Length: 416
Ligand code: 7TS
Image 1 (cartoon, protein in one colour):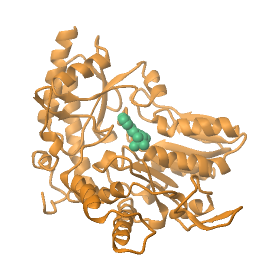
Image 2 (cartoon, helix red, strand yellow; image 1 turned 90 degrees about the vertical axis):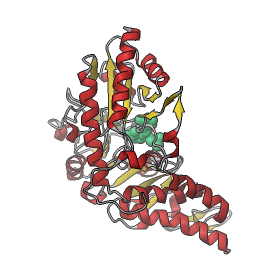
Image 3 (cartoon, rainbow, N blue to C red; image 1 turned 135 degrees about the horizontal axis):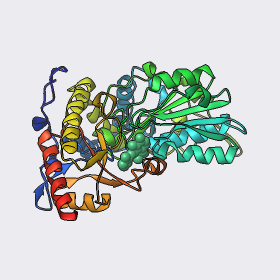
Image 4 (cartoon, protein in one colour; image 1 turned 30 degrees about the vertical axis):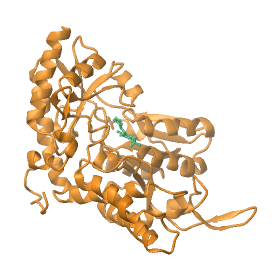
């Protein structure tokens, strides 16, 4: 898979799989069917090699030493920042802050922007389908600063119900934080529409892109949001790296969240001033190897283009949902129309507990996730304590969906 592929071409998953060494392994004596991509994706050899190559040839700390290795390390690290800046719609590189992932990016905004701008009587609006990463930081902030929380509801098919949006996003709303794609329901949210309403009352908008950035084209300017958070490990990159994009005026006005080395301009015994963006928000030694290798994940996805990745997943999701529904005992949560959703398919099998089911599927080599998927209030709203989730990516084939369906049939017989 060395040459650029025509972006219109449907992806050749069989060929793509050859770039992912882990997909060749067996689990419980069966060829692995990896369908836990919403939790984390597998890595192509180019990403794995880049991380090793960094340690083998370039390892040094960034932004400090005036020696060749330090310059190479800094260049590799900063090169990924440029990559991200263009990848999310051509923003300024200074507006891209490296974090450990989506969770840390949202915590940064909650502490640094929220702590200073959300006070008593102010409102924070979220949706009923948020991952805990875009829920708990706001619960904590609301508690600390005396703000109130309100939620945009979901309809019976797990789509955002915007009919009451104007009465929920009130003039005292200071922040609207929504996921662009649900990790449980798969729902793709009309973030731009919500952002427009939020801005009309002067609120700031954060989009959680943990599930959207890996699976569809993202342009933060088209979305019209003010902050955008996402993770490297859900898009073929290493674990422990992620990014926050924020509008420059907001970032410049914010106090740093973490303080220490790398982020200062001047330090006296009793005070300190801060470095320019983005360094103000990057205290301490970052995951340099991870950031350097993340750029290879962008290279990999760019061979196909995100339109092609999205098209592949729409077809894979359509096939998989039809296959599961065809079994007659599977109930899928979230939108039925594949154009309205991503490839995370959460479901219940009548009479079988999700944990038992996941364990049974594992015995057949099929990796899925069972649980509340870090969205406890949503899972409860769906009337469940947990669900089973199969989630696909560009290397998943319909033959694997058949393996999933066959294993579900066996499980139903076994437990039924
Ligand atoms: N937001 C959403 C929508 C997510 O799906 C996740 C992770 C996060 C935020 C947090 O990302 P992190 O990289 O900081 O951990 N979602 C999942 C999942 O669905 N199963 O495992 C992790």
